[in-house]
Length: 93
Image 1 (cartoon, rainbow, N blue to C red):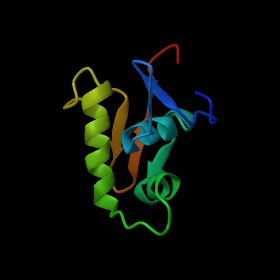
Image 2 (cartoon, rainbow, N blue to C red):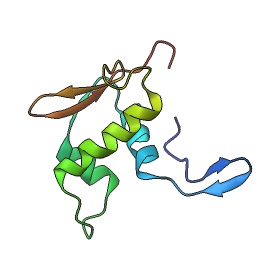
Image 3 (cartoon, rainbow, N blue to C red):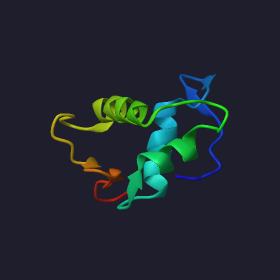
Image 4 (cartoon, helix red, strand yellow):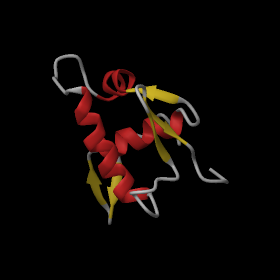
């Protein structure tokens, strides 16, 4: 995925990047690497916005529901206890 994606189109309509999309983009740019909640917070939100570390869990759940074959047994986004999350892309990405 290009880091220069600034617009998303759905059915020809321009859409803003959602937090879920930004999270997926971050995981795709850093595959196989455990990311702390703080790293995720700093990469997605600005410093003038308060988002708690546990908010990340909610966004990860939303992303899992969209991309995982079975969100309750994730194969792509893994929880790394006491650290954060790691994305393991499917073969061919």
